Length: 175
Ligand code: 3AM
Image (cartoon, rainbow, N blue to C red; front, side, top):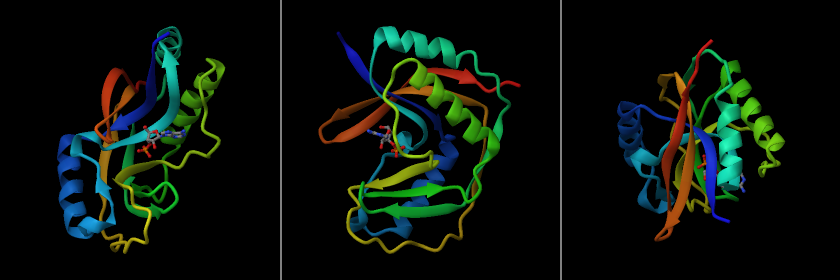
């Protein structure tokens, strides 16, 4: 049976992707970790693990039933998780809509029999991987803001030592 490694996530507008990678290049030295490509920057809502085509159909049907209004993300925080080796951008205050969307997708995934992370939802945008040594964190004097009007199911593929992400399907946020 063929499976795909899937997760629900939110993409970033291209202008914000470019601003973030320009800031990142100035804020971290090359030894800090391996930068994710601009196009791969995303916020994970729910990681699903390896999913069969049959379960994917069921998950997509449930996702299509979600009725939730758009919300705005304020990216104004950053941090370092040394154990998984991730430097990330995040939100000092996660909007209710974001948390509700992630919780809904996580409970739908659990109902469909998909893998569920035991960790609580900590919304973040991974910036650097393989950052397992101490990292000098830059001052949090940045603030990116964008409206989220859709969410997506993405496929993660691992090739030549790095992951890349492809959108399988997207759904609008509508009240
Ligand atoms: O948004 P980020 O980059 O932090 O770390 C993986 C990535 O998150 C995460 O799912 C996103 C797409 O691959 N991920 C991978 N394996 C995971 C796992 N076993 C996981 N999240 C939770 N549990």
